Amino acid sequence: MFDHPSFDAHEGVHAFHDAQSGLRAIIAVHSTALGPAAGGCRMWNYASGDAMLTDALRLSQGMSFKNAMADLPLGGGKSVIWGDPRKDKSEALFRAFGRAVESLQGQYYTAEDVGIDTSDMALVRKETRYVAGLDEGAAASGDPSPITAMGVYLGIKEVAKRLYGSDDLSGRIVAVQGVGSVGAHVCEHLAKDGAKLIISDIDQEALKDVSTQTGATVVQPDDIYDVEADIFSPCALGAVINEKTLERLQVKGVAGAANNQLVVPEMGELLRRKGILYAPDYVINGGGIINVAAEISGNYSREWVDGKLARLIETLGEVLDEALSTNQPANAVADRIARKRIADAKGLAPK
View 1 (cartoon, rainbow, N blue to C red):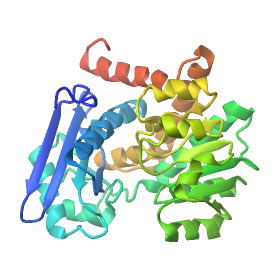
View 2: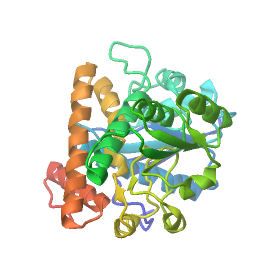
View 3: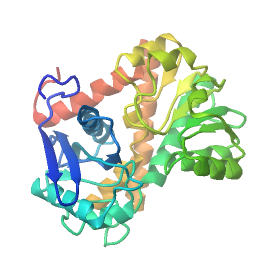
View 4: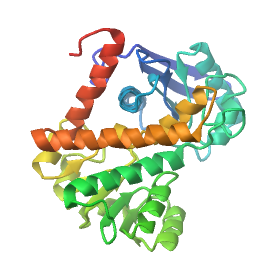
């Protein structure tokens, strides 16, 4: 555990198993320096336990940085459930997961992520109060995906502004990888702005729906890396920017909703050397956790959410400007800022 390349001084990594429901889950708490750890729950059919642990650790650290960059009173955590969300869900499973969350006594708040929806969170809520992203309740915020998508769309405009001198997306070609709950909304915003879309996904029905609504061109999942476009927007799973895909990209910018887009942090420098401007994922995709934070506060306000989101996009612009003016990879700039904010909260000097 402590030698794991993604451990990064996590405060706690908790494994849970419930034989009756079949629950196999990990809750990773990276930092509570800024407040209780918060981050969604992902359900995925992992290839191995090690793959599950790696995902939990990387996602948890990403949430610490995301919450710090969004200036939220929350630390970073994440949970993952090992299973197929299409066939392994049950009330017993999610109630067992709820008991796992409750056992941490408020150290961690959960919400939706890949493979999980608001109805699943409603079941978790039967066993714990430390859950957000609900459809019902005094401060219920609902599905955070639309807010995440709005932030990604605004972030794409920030990237375009620095690449082309204008945030006008009319006629710009954007290649969107993944048209699920977030990606579909991103495509909708882009299409309204007149962008030309090229999309890919393993879900054929989702592709058909988005293509019909936006006029997007559909390509096979692996072909999305080869298309000639202005901006590549990864909105599916992580690690899509790696040595193999980097060679194939024919874009000037990368800006999308997926978490952990870089297979390793060093890919940020390789993107820079190739002349590709990268919007750090945990900055551009912070809209959803802002929405969740408003719910956790117990006094949900869409006005507050919109204000926080606007400031986050300003922060993204500042990160991009510093990266360009100093010839640094944008992810390194964002990492430094996030680590400093967390260290300041701890009263420590960042390493």
